[in-house]
Image (cartoon, rainbow, N blue to C red; front, side, top):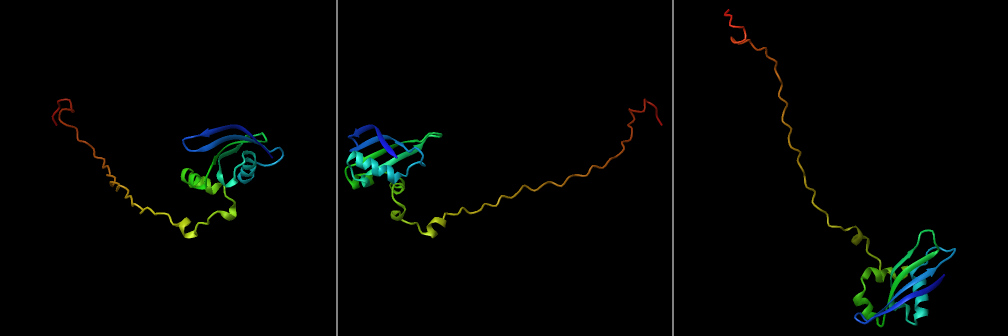
Amino acid sequence: MKVEIIEKTENQLFKRTEVKFKADHAGEPTPKRLDVRAQLASQLGVAAELIVIEKLASTHGRQMASGIARTYSSREQLEGLEPKFLLQRGMPKEAKPEKPKEEMKAKPEKPEEKVEKPKEKPKEEKVETKEKPSEADDGGKEG
């Protein structure tokens, strides 16, 4: 795998360096974040712990991955600005904190609302009745 830095920008507001890169991984699967982070650290001259990879995506049908990374000058600054999920995503599996199984299962349950179906009205039975012809119908004949 070969990592190439495409663009390097200093962000003075957040006191960090933002890097766009490409990783050529011909004949191999998409590289792991840890491997890319180690290569970026050696190229930039920064400790690997101070680098966060925001995005690493491989293009369909090509052996090339592109991504965005950010480097910080201190661990405190990195933890203050980056979301926790990105920090955990970049850690090796052994270093990730395990969630207790109870915590994973414990979700606030919504009380089940009982929805009553509207009661159907009983169908009215139709009774056929033969109507008696009225006096007007018999053509004026009285009977």
